[in-house]
Image 1 (cartoon, helix red, strand yellow):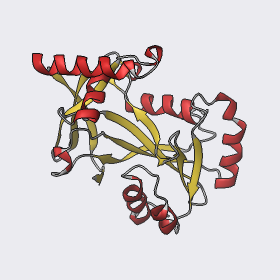
Image 2: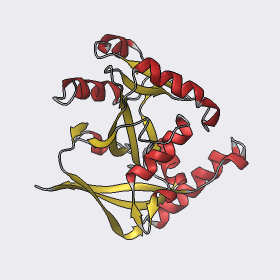
Image 3: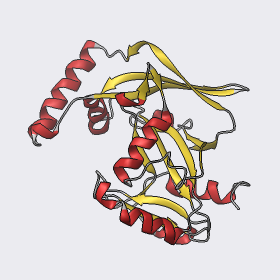
Image 4: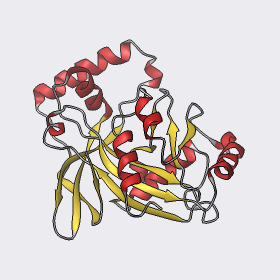
Length: 244
């Protein structure tokens, strides 16, 4: 579910910050992880820290997201077994060009996706989670550009929050995050040229920019390989009063 974010978004850290698991869960997670890495190149399997949304609240002035720390093995366990609830924290975005095209990416799985990714330890500055730091890192990795380049992007604003509705809260694996609107003074064709010239800087070479016109709803709807919330987000943007 995607909701418009008219309030200030705040982050609060769980106590304890490391999300607790029962001894039985820990044993099952470790057993599943050992089996997982056996079928893969162990050098590519790192059980690093991930940051999870433990809960979220809304009051008159702000939207509060409670964040805790877990392990990547917990996400894999939730994905493969459905026996653990994991809500990973992510930050993502779309671009609006001066001629009103909407910029997304085609990810390494060939899916239409937003520009962004999961929160990382480097996104915490002096113990505070900074979502725009996370987004800037993803822009460099996926597009090879500096999000804070004022000659390229004219505005950066958190516009939507992707949260779980009553049914989605029952799912074992459901990412929750902030969706930013990035505006540029370039037309779609001009921005494509800029991104083409920056592709050598891209870390994730399998990711490619893709643009949609406001009337491309049917084209996007018929394209089967897309992340679940992209069409909903597209509709929210098009119907927004700010989209002109």
